[in-house]
Image 1 (cartoon, rainbow, N blue to C red):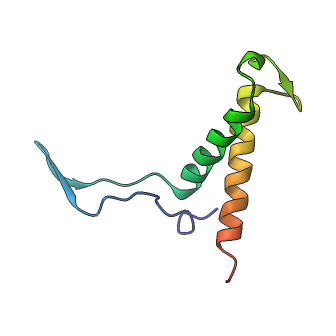
Image 2: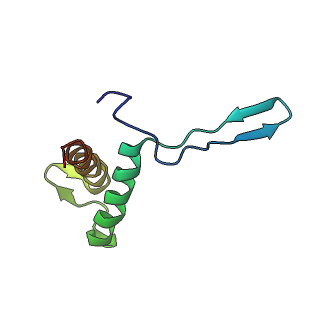
Image 3: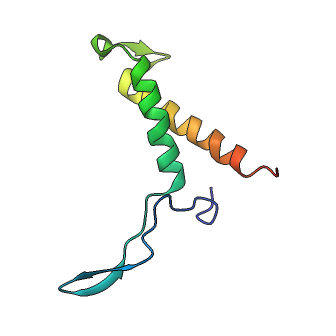
Length: 83
């Protein structure tokens, strides 16, 4: 995925002051934001007692992380379709 298509989710448009001077704070990438949202939804469906569960060959944490980015990639693809 190109950096141009993976926009920042919450860029800071004003400078922030520090002792070193001013700088612009960048936001997280949109893909990461979508993955975080998907992860939150997935975690509500995972039983907390199943930490050692084996889901499709993945440990539950790996499954949630992997699937979250798969969902995020699908959202990015859908977002780029013409309306």
